[in-house]
Length: 379
Ligand SMILES: Nc1ncnc2c1ncn2[C@@H]1O[C@H](COP(=O)(O)OP(=O)(O)OP(=O)(O)O)[C@@H](O)[C@H]1O
Ligand SMILES: [Mg+2]
Image (cartoon, rainbow, N blue to C red):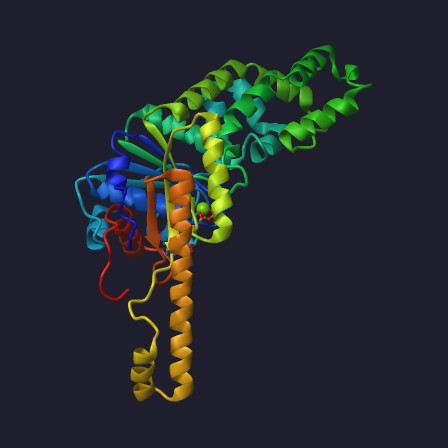
């Protein structure tokens, strides 16, 4: 296909963090895993952080269901799948709640504060709601792994979102919440006894509910007093994550479908990234339908009618025409996106036959991503 203007390895040269963003279901998780596998095969030590991967993909990477630890994919299995090389592939599934508990472990000034927070019902709700959302956790884990210096490259999958940048704003949102006046108010109320919380509390509760998505009913003072002691740590980290995202070692890849309806999404995400000053790396147009070599026409019709009965021959021809016109539409849309959004930083990946759920599938996808020469032969 005419895709190969850009070379993904060159595009990722010198990068330490790649973030794959885009609308729901376009292939963010699969593409993240394939990029990580491809870069590992090219000698890098890579970790992919996935979010809600399809069970079969998680199984094929042998990622444990729970826990936030990265696991190395067996080099021998990679080699057999055609992904062998000098690098290392590590993978993990983000587990929001566990990561949040880890932060409390780290930030709490002493064991008693830590236990108070972990046991607090508000904390439990909160850590499962906004502050514990996957967006926030993803950023948190990314930051932690980046600081560890263990990897040449971190590939971050993102949750489906309407607004590409929701997850980027999560650390700042939490820091702002911890700093907010409503929180200060509750800390003061806590010190003075809960009796102070009376008139006007309705409004505050609704503010908090809006900020957190959690209905805060009791145990507020205890919780806010404890967490207030950690606000410095949250603020610092929000700043560090923000800096990491804008760093020139970071790049965002937007994943999109080639369908007409997706063009507006891709344009929107691209603009959002630009407005936020985030480094855009390229557009990955995934699941592009390719034309079938044969063109429908009188000659093919004659050949088919010798092999098949008339009705079947007509059906085959119609299918062929449909497929080719979908492929032509995808190709037009790709040119539109190239022209309007990204210029040459666009990589088109064909629709593979069947789901991508094992190392063989990732290897096939990685080949399309890293060596997008025209493919010959049967699918
Ligand atoms: N190029 C491809 N060819 C064929 N199938 C693909 C391709 N890319 C992705 N898929 C399949 O599409 C499905 C959706 O992919 P994936 O889960 O990666 O999307 P996602 O963007 O992460 O979805 P969500 O927004 O729900 O997280 C999966 O079943 C995957 O195997
Ligand atoms: Mg996904």
